[in-house]
Each structure stands twice: as structure tokens, then as C-alpha cells.
Length: 176
Image (tube, rainbow, N blue to C red):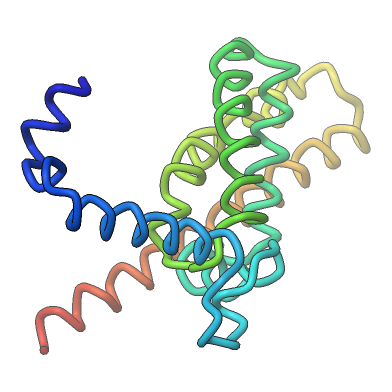
């Protein structure tokens, strides 16, 4: 691997370009960790609250992301796909901590490797919600139906958000 890096970057053999590259990488590592010294906007601060705009603009309401994480955690404990959900949880927690607390720039695509696996857990609670209600008596049956209707409404809300955003972006590219 080291040989491939050297062969693909022949300027590494020259001292001045190599030193410039190492200095630039050190500078960029510091900027990613602490933000830009010349930029005082909220966009370059590190903490989860500074990701709200990106989440709201591109991924829906933050409470919907929380609901999807809850579905993932639910699937990690109950259900027939516990191992898959545990692996997704093991992937998303450290990546989420790194992105939300330690990365200064907030581009929307940074969250894709984090949230796509989380979105895959959206249907995890459905078997528990749609459990056999024939054995339930009146009031329990009504609550089971309400539980399913509320979850379907929440998922429908998120689906509407993504479809409307996708159509908006698609139309903006057509009518440049």
C-alpha cells in the first residue's frame, strides 16, 4: 500500500512539495477539529446543536431522526433482525459522535453514511405494532390500532418531506 501511495504521488520524492503538503494537511486537520479562525459563523462550530439546520433542511425534523434511532434501538433488542440492527447501531454511534461533536464543516453529504443505515430500521417496529389484535379486548384493540396509525402517520410525514424535497431539487435542475 505504501508503494502505491508513493507511485501515485511522485512529488513526495521532492522535499519542498512534500513539506508543503504535510503543512497543509496539518492545517486542515486543525481546521476540521476546531473550525476556521477567519470564520465566526455558526456553520463552523462543533456541537450537535449546530447540525440542526443541516438535519432540518436535508433530512427532516430532528425528532424524526430520533424516532428512527429509537426504532433501531428497538430492533437491536427485539425482533428477528437483532444482529443486523446491533451492527448498524455499532456503526452509527461512533460515527455519529465523531460527526456531531468533532467535525467543524456541516455539508449535508457528511451525514449520509450515518443516516442511510439508520433509515433502514424504519420498519423494524412494524411487527410489534401489527401484532395479532384478535386476542385483545375492546380498549386494547383500539390502542393497538392507534399505535399503528400514529406510526404510519409519522412515517408518512417523513416520506412526504423527502418526496417534496426531491421534487423541488429535480425541478430546480430542469429549469436552471
